[in-house]
Image 1 (cartoon, rainbow, N blue to C red):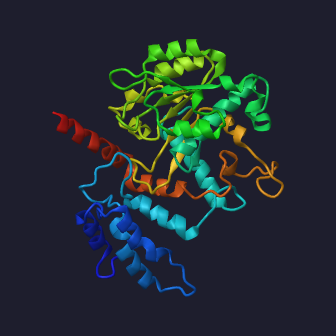
Image 2: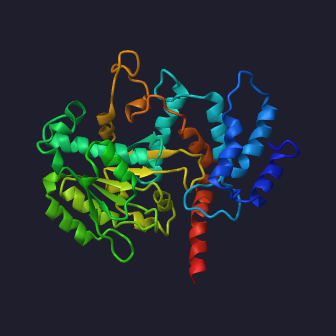
Image 3: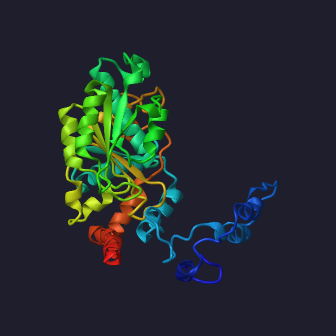
Length: 373
């Protein structure tokens, strides 16, 4: 809250303020230097606020300004901000029932509700992730794990050395796919050589004919996964999801949809046909911190079959014991210290309602269409 006025005054100031100070990196570093002079004695919060207002705030991007145009980051909507404040206030780790009964249960219930909201199959499930990059990484780990199972071994135990020829492990994706796939194959120990780019058509969508050719050329037994994109970063293009999924399923290849940017638009009736086939994918990633206006970071990974998350399960003697039957989100993804990410998303959806969310999603697209005329 602004010391000289109300929260509404502060919000109005943000709308009229400059987007960014425009200062050079050297000037920004100079202004921020007082913030990293850690001293023996602390300071009152009022002085700390004044220091931040002087040193930091001018150099932060002003997402609330009408002049700020971005595909990704947004100023938190009020319902999400309300939930985020509660998340910080209660500081719940939601790994399992042991550390937060209400938090763990709410995340599990939210996961199922999101699956229903997006029209995923009855046996689907979801887990909250740190970001879309992390969600894509876990999806590809699950794909690689299933590929190992087809060859008769447990990837968690043997790693990629269990494959007869690790040099021949490939992932097919559009040439416009997100760079997080490079992070994923690096982290999985496969290297960027494992990425097989597929050409795009005139609308920057994956060319299905070239996709089939790449499967034939690469060899079905060497392909552990396929990634289709539902909303590319550069153009917002949505790959032909149904065709890609059907081909992948027929070839017995794990298909993942990177919907970090675009999946939200499947909730808008007139745009939903673009996303038909998403329910066929083995896994789908999504970032609520984009169009939903939920504070960064907030991401979700969906799987078509809830049992697929069992490939992530890890038990210990003192934490997440195998005999525990309580709700346990920590068995579905790696973080053992899990933020209460479901809460700001839940409060945002409850506050806005799906009708307002659809309007929020529809408005910028309508503006772009009018500008193009």
